[in-house]
Image (cartoon, rainbow, N blue to C red; front, top):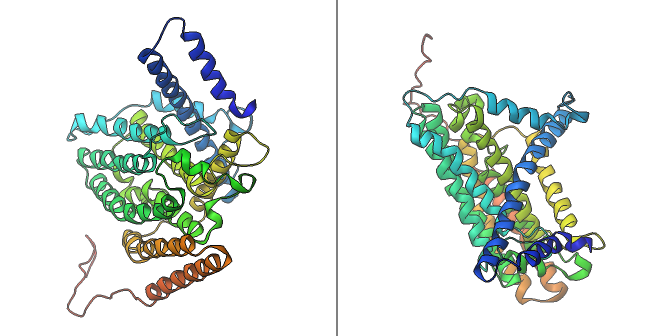
Length: 391
């Protein structure tokens, strides 16, 4: 009963509405219920993901974190929301006002749309598209357009550089991200997120793709590229405070700034939830309700994102680009070959060969990249002094 409690609640609402509605109007009501559920769930989720991140990063840095507003600081997100609403909204005089206002609104829309194809439990996907994965990665890429729009419309060199970095980063990391999904599609035989989750339902709900060699490597590649796509540490070069003040959102304040942060946290959770769907069995698991399993797994993956943020420093932009093209791309291509071995050679022989080739490919790519050294300035290259400094 608990497993399908939300599904039953929706069915009760639709059954009661059958007295007044029928046909396409009833279908419209069903879609409206899904939309309202996402619009209510997403802001609440974002509020307490920020609280969780501030608490965990504070403990990593030997601090207390939010602890003043409400018990354990649980009301801090509400206080922050009120503060953002009341803060003065400043738009630079030279900015393109229309695009400057549109950018924070447009960046939230793809973040919310990604939730539409995520199966939060058995029979709990808002839209069961047969191209669900393709829809997800396509919509996630649209956020970069809003980031570039915000950076360009601000008429600030720092904002523009942040927007250009975001564009370069998304182009680079989309390629290995897409390739990391090919083995999952091969074994599941579908692009539907629901069918991929159902394909991992064996072994009492523990037949997860991450337990395969290609699944383990694919999971690492997907998570790495996903973190880069949503501009999370250590790939947050588009908003590098040490170089670009605040990057693409330097000239934003108040609720417009809050919308950028909302999109970042929702996208990060969406990437975590999709990783659970593709590699960690989705909602499958013993005893507990399916939606509870899914949320526990998703929060565990999101915890890793917070852990990384509190542990690693920010990479340089050249390191970010080189990591995508020189390391992740060859590994993602090799992983397709490894998946083919596991697919066409059944049993322990195929499993063992797959692990062998995964380790071989990983250490080969690592060894090739480790032999490359940084290019030094030639003797004919002069570096000008900083302004106000003697040569």
